[in-house]
Image (cartoon, rainbow, N blue to C red):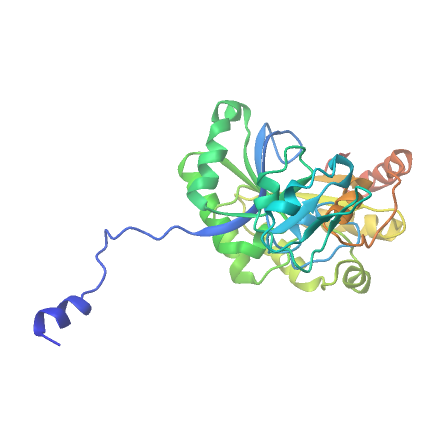
Length: 322
């Protein structure tokens, strides 16, 4: 190797070398949201979650892989997907039934792109943090009354670097940042995200460690450690969110434990009781999955109001039912 070539090869990157964009996978960006933090917000839904909550209503966010969703009720069995699919995953029978062989499907998206009736949809696309923020900033005129961006999922901590970069860029633009999370992540991942977070919508799914693992698949210790870490950071405000699911965690002891927990934290500003709704059950079928919780009944709001009233006697933190 000649001397000039060797010198060029060993030359370090300059300080002004362009930074490589961080990419991640999302399954939706929802505009004009009013229940995902203060004010009007844009919510970015990230793919991938380490938990497997029995009542999950966003199953398209569980896997980090791109997936094909099939809405059978919209399908007219035109057969276009069967013609276009390179892997022959789609077939239409002589009696007009649309069959999807998911073992052959690679979620390439060709069928969804060409389905005029919206019966096929791809859940999951890879974008850069800059592209995500560009989409978020389209709603900037609506953020004047305390709104901003919320990252949800899935679990945003599952893609900690991507999440942190979106938040960092949003903070550069002066936006209020909010993260909806289960709190389950390694401390270093949580710290990366916390650095650029103004508010946490922190799920408390169960306060009994054994039941938490039974219902979600993961333990409670790391979650509680991260909640205490967040509370030690005075600039970060936390809303405790309580998914309330009949047959699972509607235990008086659970809600009493949350009230006691909130009383011992200095930066918890509200507690939200989140009634179970069955709208996610159908999504499992659209993904070719069997829902772990098949209950199609909405939570009883009268029962939850009694729970709220009892909890409010135990803590000064304001409690509401969403």
